[in-house]
Amino acid sequence: MTDITILDGGMGRELARLGAPFKQPEWSALALMEAPETVKTVHQSFINSGSQVITTNSYSLVPFHIGEDVFQQRVRELTHLSGKLARDAADEADHEVQVAASVAPLFGSYRADLYQADRVTDIATPIIEELAPFADLWLLETQCVIDESNRVITLIEQIDTAQKPIWVSFTLEDSEQTAEPLLRSGETVVDAVKAMQKRGIDAILFNCSQPEIIGEAIELTQRLLSEMGENNIKIGAYANAFPPTPKDATANDGLDELREDLTPPAYLTWVQQWQSKGASLIGGCCGIGPEHILAIKEYTQNHTS
Image (cartoon, rainbow, N blue to C red):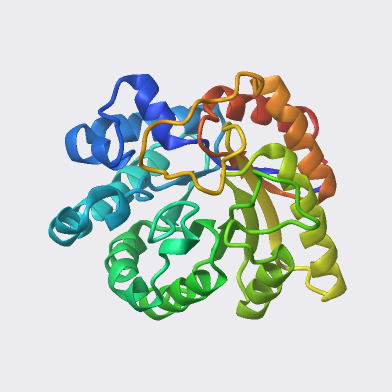
């Protein structure tokens, strides 16, 4: 099986567990504003548990979370800070750690209905410009609108001319059974994979979805890439610990409950399944903490190829 590169876990819930300022709608952005040292502490916690890639705490630095006024006034300052905190933590680590620059869904998680193509450039540009000096790679997270992913990829290629790897991670419909894996927009995983292959990105991942639904998407992606003769695109996964999220969920109403069954050993079972299906970039999303990452590290140490 393919060796695993270990990603980090969910920043927001770990901040909350540390007692950092944390509430909706600001989510993990609030700690950047009021207690940035806690963000670095979380990065270090994941690194100490075995993460080889950490993700900047820039996910919530969009108007959907911090509001239009704060976005206009502080997006560059806060995004720069998120990049520096991650870079400092990575550089101080006792093993090699890469920084993934997180570009979130610009109009809110799961909210394909709020997508505005004409605002992508205005929102994404300052985020990309401020993260570029700190990034080893780019990670578009929780994507569910293919057009949005395409537009952000174009901006990254225009702004960051260093040609760093670009990873795109999609979130999957998991509130109901579907005939084939779908993005939360209703677009198909098949169309997403084909679009990303055409753009020449470096990795396709699936995140912020239930672990039960991710395996099928990995299997489909592996098959499609094989059929296209595409051997250079890596596959990855980092699930959340939420129950199924209904289509009418509104991400800013409050904190979702976490599943109690996704203990580190239980989550590791899913990790092993994803690896067997072809995934090599594996970590965790909301509710997956350093203890889960440590379990993955210990597993990889005992099962290196």
